[in-house]
Figure 1 (cartoon, rainbow, N blue to C red):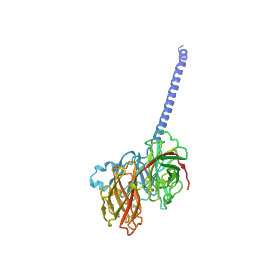
Figure 2 (figure 1 turned 90 degrees about the vertical axis):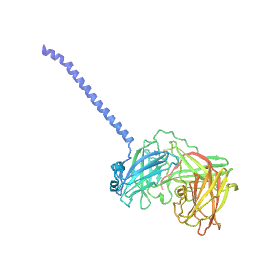
Figure 3 (figure 1 turned 60 degrees about the horizontal axis):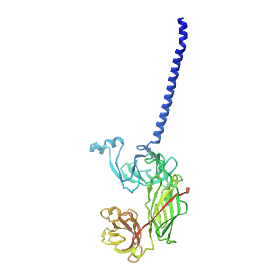
Amino acid sequence: MICACESVQSGPVIGLVSARKNRTTRAVIGLFVCSLLLVAVIVAVLNVDRSDVGRVRKLPDGSTLSLREVALAATNYSYSHRSGGRILRLFGPVLPGFLRSYFRITSGSLGFGSVGNTNLIAITVHRHPAQNRGLAAGRLRVSDDQGNVFDAAWGAGTLGQPDETVQGWRVSAFPRRNRTISLHFLAEKGDGSWTNVADFRVPNPVFANYDQWTPESWPISKGDGNLAVTLGEFQSGARVSGRRGLGDESSAARKTRVVLGFAEDGRPTHDWRVQKLILSDATGNRWFPYLDFVQQDFNWTTNATVEFFGALWPGERAYKLNVEVARKGGFSPDQLWEIPIDLPPLGSIAALTNFWEHDGLRVNLVALASPNAEHAGNFRWIARWWGEDRNRVYSLALRIDPDLRGRRLTVVKALDQDGREAPVVRHGNQDAREQAVFLKPVDGARTVRLTLAVQRSRFVEFLAQPKFVGGE
């Protein structure tokens, strides 16, 4: 009976134990699966938000490039640098002087002024043998996961140390529709072509889901007053002209080209030129290239044609082109001012007190410096010539009061005492009150007669998609 009873009772007990084991097994399996999913999610998140800031890349020549810092800056930005590894950078400031000398700890800083845009600042440190920079990065491209690439910077602010070079790269525009972006640093080879030396991936600081703009239908014409401006060409992707465009298909520098047409009172005219071009897109990028009005080299404008470094990316359906147009000929007499100025002896500066009042502006001539002579105050930098022919270029410092407010000061012509042209090699800082005009008179010139004009600019806006071209 006992055995029979035990035999009868054993079935439910065994079933209960089995059910519990099954539930435990399913729970374990479920927990394991959830753990795998959690790990997958964490890995995905880490992969999406992975940042290479602080990482070091070994370059083909044995030197190294580290990405020290990446920051989004809408105002002025500065970076303080200390040499050495992380430990030395951390404890270097509190070490005694003899230890800092022993470890050869050096320091310095880089600064960036605000240009009214949102800039991405990247700081890199290139460690190399003393006196041999090797494959130093000279160009920066930015790309996203969709294959959109933008040639963002040619050259960088530099802080030189004995065995390392600190560079600050300003990126005024970049694709913003992906969670991450990649920074590609290129170095120039001996033949003038380029090679990619290091890549870093960082989170996109302004990633969001942005709307797309709809481009206007071609042809696009806009007017301001009696001036009509037509967008005839908007092209992006061709190689940069000349030696700067050397390299294979993957590394060659690219450019964007804009060609306009002008009509005044319904008649075609060549008396106008592009003064300034501001580009923007639906994601918040807004920037402008610095244009050279004298030489058709790198970023330049002549009459109605503009070319600038950096091919736009096709991820945007349309870009806004805000165009400022200024007259370069056909001035009325009341818009002009002629003033003769004696050229100062070499090594000296002539203070000037001449001024002209027109259309609510006062143009003050401050000083004319001979080649290699330095102005005072802010003009020490604004009116300093950094280019070629330093022994031949004179610099005229001038100030405009109260401010431009949509007007422009233009140098119409410059002649010496014999009527020979004294070429204007640059008119610098044209957006500001303090400006500089750089002149290169011919040999034997004793005076220069300047003809200046004050005018009100014209403004038009286009919303267009560029035609993308590639290849050679």
